[in-house]
Image (cartoon, rainbow, N blue to C red; front, side):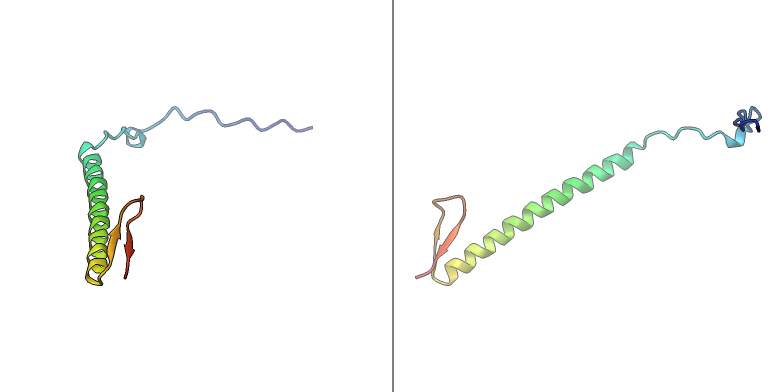
Length: 78
C-alpha cells in the first residue's frame, strides 16, 4: 500500500515583498459614501413632495376638491 501524501510544510523563506501590509481605513471614503447616501435620501424625499404638490395642483386646476380625511389624499371631481 502507498503512503498517504502529506501536505507541504509552510514556506519559511518569505520575502519582504510578499508581505502585504494592512491598509488603514480611509475615513474620507466613508464620509463621501455617507454624504452620497444622505443626498440620495434628500433627493428622493424632495421629488416625492414635488410630485405630491403637482398632483394637488392638477386636482385643484380641474375643479376638484381634496379630501384628506384618511391617510390618502383623494381628489373628488364634480
